[in-house]
Length: 291
Ligand code: PEP
Ligand code: MN
Image (cartoon, rainbow, N blue to C red; front, side, top):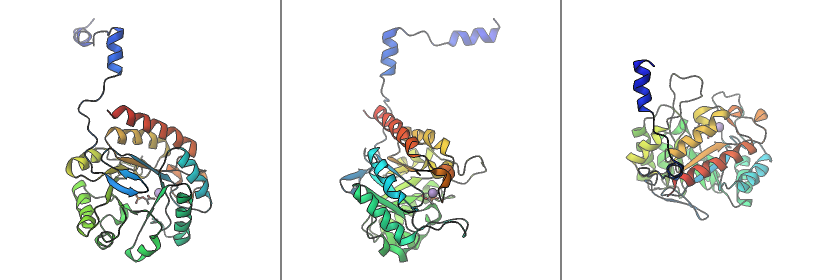
């Protein structure tokens, strides 16, 4: 044995007896306190933050009747908030732009039929009236610093999910949220959806540490969006679990009945059965962390 081998062999953990092993498995996390956010009333008896966890799931875009089938499947998995985009901020103007008003109507109908809340992205304040039947308004990454939109949403009596911009610092994101709260609406949820870095293997870089930092610096509930953060369906489950371990108050995931033919973000969509497995693991992780 070389000197180095000997040094490290001395550092090996001593073998555990059976009873010690059992107590190690049952140990809870003493320093972990995810409940630093404030609870927000979402309506329909649902809350987020302050110990209330929410799964938000659905297709990137509402494409038609498929939303009804997806809604009932997600409901059976325990999801209370159905997502779907109707006005889509697409990079390429020739890409599918969403079904607009008709899409919002389908989303509201599919969600409410299944006793779910619905969330959809709003791109401009002039559309606010179209969102009467939408329970939660999403501000997308591209509009995170659109201050006139944020001020207008401060006057709306609905929860707002504010996504982090691609190049928005944590402090800037909190300032953006303050535009909404200072205009009169304190029901703001923040969303980490990845930021632009030099990395190209993922669509964005999932900044999991921002979840802890946002909880440290503010009392807004924080959800993670591992779908847009990674852009790769295989990475969505591990990053969802990382977010939960980091104290996220919820997660937002894109699900499509047949990702290969999805009209937007097909590379990152989970199938309904993949989502069902993920939901099981996320809830197992949550239960492990709750004490
Ligand atoms: C979306 O949720 O479909 C979306 C466009 O997200 P982001 O604004 O994070 O890109
Ligand atoms: Mn999308």
